[in-house]
Length: 171
Image (cartoon, rainbow, N blue to C red; front, side, top):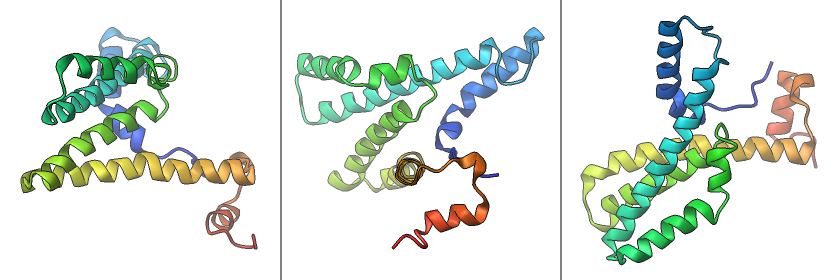
């Protein structure tokens, strides 16, 4: 069996999941991953990562001495003028809001490391780049395969998966 989901979002949701698991265990509920606290923890995680991403956008804009009223306008535009709002409120389990947060943090730390020459931020930006690759690039490879080849994962064997992944017998 092939799992079509990668671990990036799961890693970022883990602290919230563990908090929900503890609350569910204490309250005597079903610790099956589908009860009320688990669902609430995913919503809280998406809100947290949206605010996390917006925080790093603010830090980056403040470095370039953007006026506070323009920063506020940019934050409102990002929050409500893009699909980030939908992916925070409605589709909290999807990777978009988590990718936004990691890219915003990466831009900030990469700026600190490379533009300002503060090497202590190099490790942080490298770790964030690794998470971004896990979140974005790997997920995009998977969605490309699914859309382009119309693969039904439940019917796919390991050998057939690698044939598609490596583009064997396609040309």
